[in-house]
Image 1 (tube, rainbow, N blue to C red):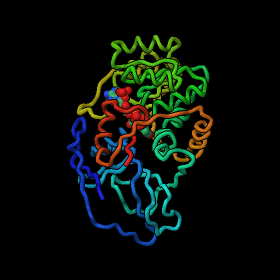
Image 2: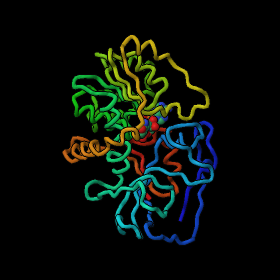
Image 3: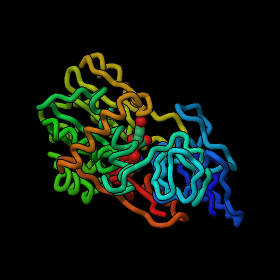
Image 4: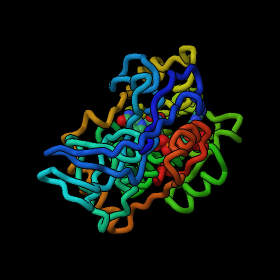
Length: 331
Ligand code: NDP
């Protein structure tokens, strides 16, 4: 049985040396009410970078010397639990271990006949819910409006854009390579895309792609990309601040344009979004996402890395944009 621990807290961009592997030959035993789980799929997510630091946030930090955890789909291989049986697949927050004992708390059974198991970590999991609820609850999208999405080719962004298309918006995605832009427009139906790595004047590029201005901005990255969007917002624009991956590894407080004049001038709304605040809306959101998936209106892509030992490198690759859609590790 293997485990991945947080070895030390990263300063700046995390590296492989922040992770430690341990191995034990001891057989895991379960008591009444417990399950033995075998990890099948592990979700690696940008927000885990925040938990590797000890700065105050909306979730407690990982402890140095203790296992890291994230969204996981695992198979029940032994059970003394009243609800879950051997052979069931469960999803929830679990530790980075090949096998572990659980009392089942916080875990839900997933149906592998309805969707592939990995989908419960993406489109039918946290990132799908983030896309749906962030857009609906703060974005309040209306047909005919223009939305700009940063981090558009990732797990959250690629779903936001497709939902916005379903709802009749003009959709512009910002991502880091021509290949990703091609995927957004060809596979996901975005109207336009901007490769920020090849664009000198982002303000002008956004203006050109959004001639009627920007009504909604779904922000996954923060930093200069988001500064450029601000110059193009319309009156009553809504900005969903979902993530800021471009500054997660900053060692200094990031600076940029002052947002206040843009907000005042345009009566615009900018609001931070944390998906867990909307837990009461998860069933409704899951239902709608499943319907769109089964109707073929919504699709998704994944970057699947194989092997338990590659969990840290898959996580690190998020910061180099190596994923298209949801980054998943298959064990
Ligand atoms: P993604 O699948 O989008 O993966 C991260 C992507 O970020 C990379 O593929 C890369 O794409 C892009 N990126 C990396 N570094 C930079 C940079 N310096 N500047 C611009 N883009 C960069 O991850 P998720 O979809 O899981 O998450 C997207 C965002 O949403 C993250 O910020 C995450 O923290 C946040 N989030 C927030 C939640 C909430 O409840 N608030 C819930 C889930 C996610 P590229 O090649 O385009 O650069």
